[in-house]
Length: 59
Image (cartoon, rainbow, N blue to C red):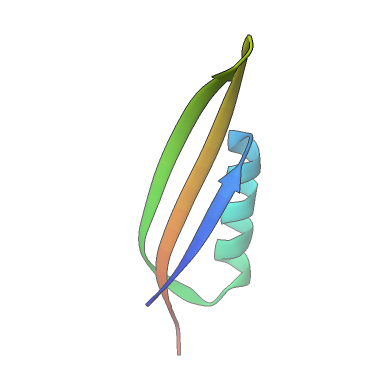
């Protein structure tokens, strides 16, 4: 079993990175965990979109 972790500033970037990984690799996905974190710096909100894919390689 292996994991792949993604961390992006925009949800569309995360979506593209995860979809690219899923289509370019011969894997069986066991689980996908998704999380959003928000912080405030001065008056700016900073978002962090992350995902962890738990998978095994297909034979």
